[in-house]
Length: 537
Image 1: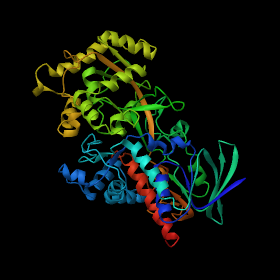
Image 2: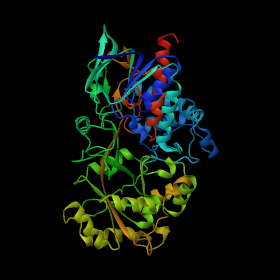
Image 3: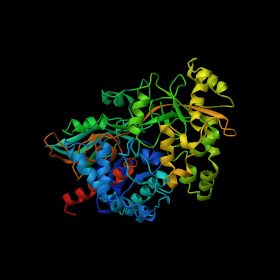
């Protein structure tokens, strides 16, 4: 049996694990980083993510004349996440986040040679204005893929004297402890089938959340909330909760496991990386959300960008495990987007001129790509023809052409007497969104769905898709895993999504969106500082 000895053992090669390794290597410690995936996929889910970050009081916000502060952000965070007085550690981490995201994340990434797009977006505003009270969503130029690649570069640059051992395709099967102190782990090398012993003074768990396992997702679902009959997997398949349970066997506490940041509009990935792999759409604000019969979901219409948590529950409560988005080409080319680096090549590859062209003239390339690659994107010149295609895809005759026509006619009636007499909540939300410049660029001016020249008509069949775990192993502000008595387990740390982005659930029930990548960085850097302090460095 092969044995690896190091000062620090990091379990998980996502963003949180890589940042932990960077900081520990810089402090002169030896690090063994164990990752379940292949070398090409080092970086985990962050390698494929879009790269949005909720950051507070940044120079970019100030340039856009946004007067943000940690106090304002914390008020938004606690209200929107519904954190109560019993959420002591999550509240501590929320406060830590808003107070340190500028210096510990924004400034640190700028110093690392990264940059942000020159616009701050306004997401998760809340259905009653109870979310982000102002724009905070910063996008990494190059997407999260460039962020992850840069962190991997920095990790190797910090490896002075061959103090870094990278073990790919290794799965940790057990955590080991002696006299109450965690001393390492045992693993299997899936490339060779051989067992491996991993010895270290400190073990840092960075294995992601639980939502990569639909079984774990369903087992932890909050019973009072509707759960769909079927859902797609938008998380990492190796983020399956197994290591959470191993840590719990040593006394660690898993909290807020039922709180999840899923998305309401997923489609099966046209080129899946694993079984059940889904793509998360950023739905069009101007599209109508319909039930399986082609009727508009109401009485309050569904509109993206205000409350993802509520949106997911509305979709999960539908009679069938899918909904339809009804729109036209005009809307799709202006508003359609998919989350992640894969379908945002202009941002990912830093093609500024092409990005501006597609933003201003319409992203026809993406619409054509999805129509060609995904059977869940339908197009037709008539609503009757579209209804027929919707039924063919669903394998039923539940969408009647006359009902789809009535749905479109009822919406278009809003425009019959001019915009002064609009009386539709979706139109009000769209108008509100268009008051902010960056949203105005990506949101159509309200118009009839059947407006001349706006066609052809489109329908997209979507379903709920898993993404991030908001709960995880309970940790203190030093990222140390705590037992049932609130005492730190000697030698055991947890960072990133595995720790619920701090404290076992820093976001509560809702995220202000974009809190995940910074949460990985903040918890990782906190763990590294604590480890160094414990070693007298």
